[in-house]
Length: 117
Image 1 (cartoon, rainbow, N blue to C red):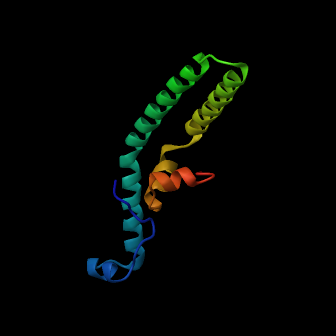
Image 2 (cartoon, rainbow, N blue to C red):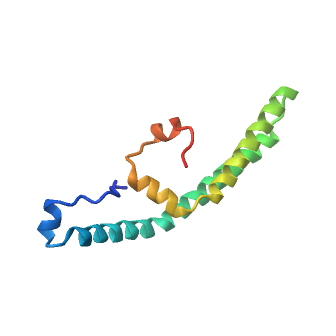
Image 3 (tube, one colour):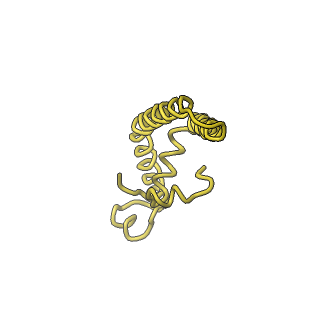
């Protein structure tokens, strides 16, 4: 996926297109909106697959056996994963797309962030 900046760059580009700065900004906003709409389906699909993966992981954690401490640890981890699923369901696909388009992100930086949204 290519990175698209949400900030319009007005200058030589606007004059080169023969657009007024306000018209260029509006064209840029429409372009961003089109990108958001295009990515909506992919974001929904990724969310579904992630929720399914987490659900399988929760099931495996609940079935694990061991000492009392290990079972409690697995139950706490499963509860955290359930909370993560509920948080994912509340986030709108457009929020995810806009976050991805406005920042240059990679997996390591997302994992280090305390609060993504």
